[in-house]
Image (cartoon, rainbow, N blue to C red; front, side):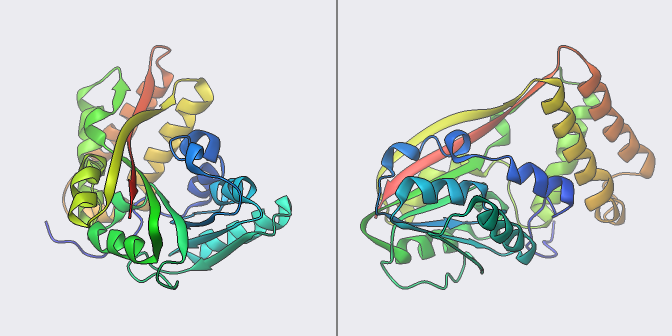
Length: 268
């Protein structure tokens, strides 16, 4: 399969950005929180609309946090949220993880949540993280690994939908199994004292399930419908069946989704 273009596979629909805004550092960054203290300088790479970045800013104050994202839409949202929360020790900019606009050895911590598994060459981003970290500085990664996911109860069409999702990710440079590669890649880049953990983001309430159903239906039938049909991965009828499978899953009182997240802490 040939990669057409490297880009964030989820897209930037209002619905998806709203989901990003619900992320909190207390939940998604719990594995890093014990390492954060006042006066640190932190980089949040792939900061999205800034909810976690601003949480970090409060934890490290009077230190500083710098949020960077490739999407101007996300940075616009982050600046708006920063104004609403009246936090002054956060700084946002657009830019690439492959070429960070920061000096060598500038940061005590680099945090990348759900970023590297969207990249075609994540090792290049890790090399940049190493460059901008101070000696002894810490990198913290959290990425998906679909082999650990539980979307229950399973059905043939639901399994097929995940096969389609994986094809979209692969086509655009991503890898939904990437989290399991953390330790190997960190070792290859020269990081030390690596700690690996795994946790789940769980979606079991009616509201949670509706959110997941809407997210993946948007992904399949709106954001990437043209790509899926142009690549002949599915017929229109098959695409409808996969989206309907998400409806059936959502409506089942016994259903839930537990998304596996691999986490890594390492030192320069």
